[in-house]
Image (tube, rainbow, N blue to C red; front, side, top):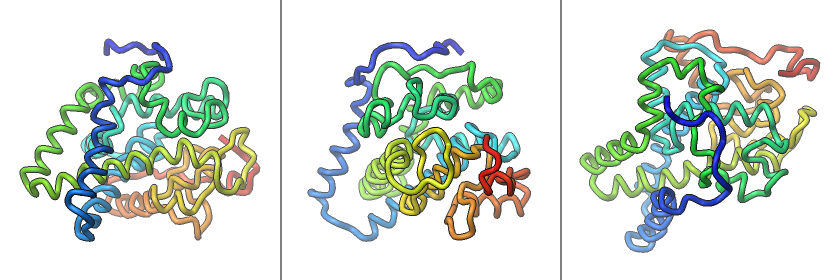
Length: 280
């Protein structure tokens, strides 16, 4: 674990290393013009979008960042791998930075606060800079002890490339275009909306000290992450849609997995938390 535990560098875009990011956007736009629209293609894009979104919401976020439930070491690795395929950097990097976000939410040290640096910085600017390249090992000691997670964290890019090659081998250019390129662009911006729009649009049920908000729209496109004010009110709950009508697909799937014994000890939001009498 040789990476620096501190944030270093400047708020400057890493133009060379971010070529794949911009390239995916360019290829997605070019492909739509060249090949035209395809409903079947959109179906593949949405399928791989939501499968990999689950890797972020259930894996990177609720499990690795917040430990809101328990699972086996094998399924833990599966969650980390699925999150890695979402192309949002390494699992330990992601979870460590997210823990820092909660500690300093919308304060000066929050690494992606729209209150501090505006919408575009919170949406994607921060992740493209040199300052936050390092994994903050001090914040993720609980999971850094697993060598397989350190491996995925270090070699996340080759893992993604291998996944793309496999998709090409199975379905050729149409599958890799819709199922990987278009799907990944959607996935990036769907996830980034929680950092940006979830602090700008929606309703606030709880006074959390930050600008987090609840949004049904964001919850639908992120499998439940749009109940962001709920989450910042009580970050340890495996269920972020506290009320019955607050759709939280990630939680429903986790609940189903718990019936199968794959995950267990899903942490609830206690009644006093939902009533606004307790926070965490």
